[in-house]
Image 1 (cartoon, rainbow, N blue to C red):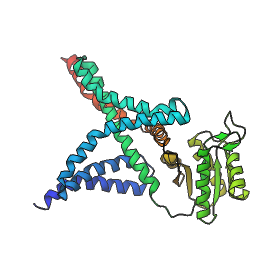
Image 2: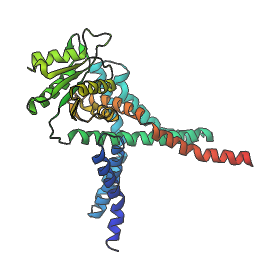
Image 3: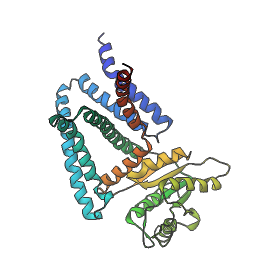
Image 4: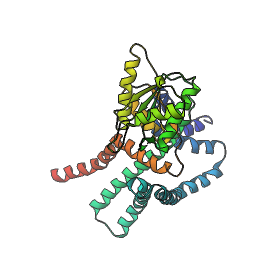
Length: 337
């Protein structure tokens, strides 16, 4: 019985950890790994605190959890001010503030409904919004933890191709963001003994003088001493998904009779979504992230999370279905009687 107690305490955490490890080893480029990791941590951390007699740490942990929404709100609003000062006022730069407003609304909805005695049907809809919001925040934290883990894991591989994702131009020159991606890719190429090809991936926008691929080629040749023959241009893509699809077609033409492995080099906040797209089309690739300025990272990650959420909408449908089920049953009973 003495052994059974700790086993029961640890079992949920160990089970979720095992599920996470199996899923990760099978395919690290999938969203569900983030959820498995979050639940593993949620179950394991309290169990460890209790097991090792650190019950006193539970109170600080609870206080941190209680204070975290306020700290998050202050951070999001402060970050919005900083980003707007650097990048100007537009929808993309006020995303942190919009998220802060959503968090305030989530916490205030039920008390407001109770104070002003909202009708029952409206309170029911608010409860649905609360459940959907809870999943939104949990998946946000999960993805933040998992994408950080995914990016920092060491990978000792020699890549047959290093794909560089485009990121806009200033005239015919790469933007600082794009230069960061190019430099990261070239550094990786040099580190592996200048083996493999560098795939410059990016088409020509309506307001651009040349394609992003051509601008990347010029930068690598002129500023990083990369020979032309080591560069392959993919100059038709206009989205991240097209980046990986069109690059895959080029690489299949180069490697007609043998398997190949590539790296996707993009900004660190963008790595996971690019890798998800690669997995979806069967491209064997690892994500490699280039540095993003600290003040811009939260805004960029929120934008990425929204894009990933749009691709993983099923949990929101399931939550709505579970919410609607008892309502439908009661309605049927009412009509039947």
